[in-house]
Image (cartoon, rainbow, N blue to C red; front, side, top):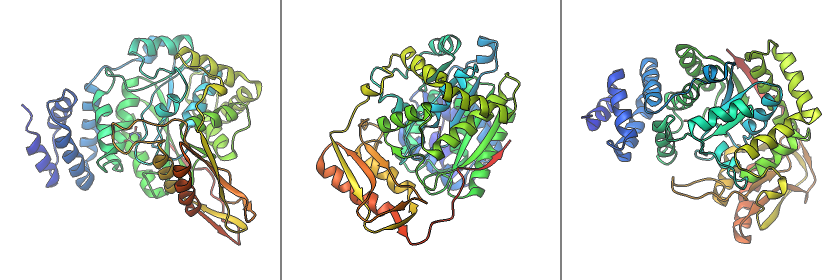
Length: 432
Ligand code: URA
């Protein structure tokens, strides 16, 4: 019988817990023997006290042990690659990277999460596609990666159930932004889902859980260490999240932007990140290419249309309708007007993410339903010039009053000055 209150107290007081204790706590939580309120208190104690590297690895192993694991390498007889992001605003990277990698002949199998806080989740974006099923069984997942070359699924009941529960609990108890909790959450899913090689996109800046490059490096090192211990090849790209990625923030809007990108018409920052991540994934695969050749092949897959064809095959394989016209549309679209002329010097990622959340694109409590049609399109980005009265952004809302409120929030997220800002590349650093 696990003594949850005792473990919470010891962690609160700064003790190091043993692997056996962490395993017992996590496994009991996964089967409902430890209630949400005790696990929330435990997460808060971890938030303030942290976990040692040994505790972080033990937590990761315990979460993996809460469910089934897959060995995609054995099932496919190939090197299987996967990517994951620590979460950002407008981050639809996996939706574009998956089809490009698969179109280049490398199997891509990924388990994704839902939105957390002000950040969107890949599963919520995919569920804006009518009919799309994120809840495949482990057997269906393996079959689809083998037959189609690509599958992105939710954390099914049989794979890392403890993280599925913890992830949504942390979302609503202000315990997301802790290095050990993020590293173990991400790496438990990556290791359990069975890919051999993983590219981790560690977001840095205003809209990320990691606000500084130093914090992002700490998280990257923690995940590289977990990967090493589990015998996986891992590369971390540290990327800018001081502003939303691309233009679109909100589920169906982001799927539309993915489609534009797969047609070669995506926003420059998003396109650059997609090609960079894809280059690393192809270099880690069994194709025998380096990063530059991987990137060239990725660009060719977009140009030749094979990436878009793969996207359509994949969406159909998971029951969805891949046509853009099938995506939901918000009834109310309102422009956000620039109050003055000048250069856009800042566009706050958190503010835009929060506006999308207020519009209904994300969850305030773990039971909230998502409105897939709503969100924000940031037409102007830092570095762009703007005339007074020109549209800065577009609000996609359920009704006029929600749109008006969101427009006020978004105009406040923009700063317009007389001088252009210094530009920051999207990929800041690569480690691993
Ligand atoms: N993404 C995850 O999968 N888990 C976290 O804790 C944060 C981001």
